[in-house]
Length: 321
Image 1 (cartoon, rainbow, N blue to C red):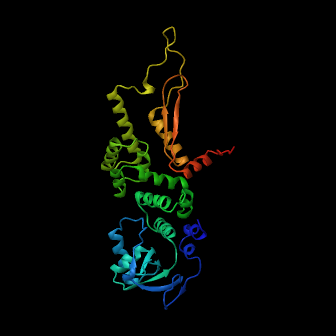
Image 2 (tube, rainbow, N blue to C red):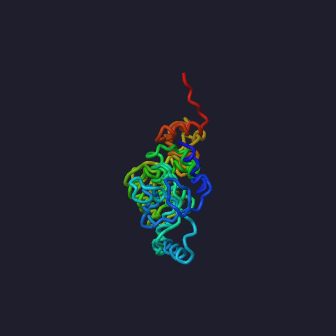
Image 3 (cartoon, rainbow, N blue to C red):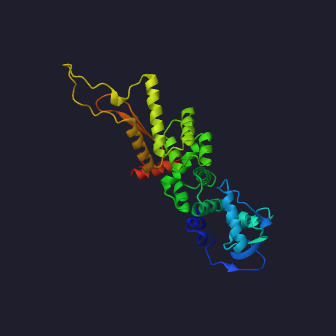
């Protein structure tokens, strides 16, 4: 990743990289000058992560621009087909300027590639306007898959911790109906993280829909999951490990207390804590047999980069023979 890409998290000055001059002449390929461009010659950024623009906010911004003018320039690049310019930063300002009736807007023309355009679109939205959880998730995944940016590089670009970036990307593993609820902001990032702890399928979708309908908090969602598991165990006739009869010694008296397994709610809390620390899905399977309370911990990874990151967090080094 080159030097220009690594400056993306530092704001507009990091993108431009030098002072901006005011120009009234022709626009060059990478003029780094403040020019005025007809609004009709501008097109949206195809890498724009924001899916929807709030109508009320756009109208309010348009009113302000109509009274005061557009105080901050947009950032653009020339379209590859030569038919005008493509926005890199400032789509909300451009849309509002059109509503305000402006024939042209102040702009800074730069020359950057698709990867930088996609990353800057994410940076601007993260810094200026709160993106929805799924907008972030899909944007981060695009940077990772389409432009081969590692989770660490995305983290540096947008100013998020790497584990947070990884958790956002994991939201794209959720079923489409759940992603739709998150796009509609009926569920949020924290809900998504909890739902990732449930095996995929109809049950997870059902619980997510109930959570959205009841506008439940994250704690409320966790209680729903526990209630569902308790009912499922009752129907199947399975008894929770903590409710099983105590061990009985040879004389018929209760034997010495064994280190019993944790309640499911405690296991879920541990899974969540470990997941937060490692930035990936963690599953604890407690078998419930024997005094040792045997079991397994399953740690998921989805890319080679994420695997190396997990090893780094656990202070494990790969040795080469």
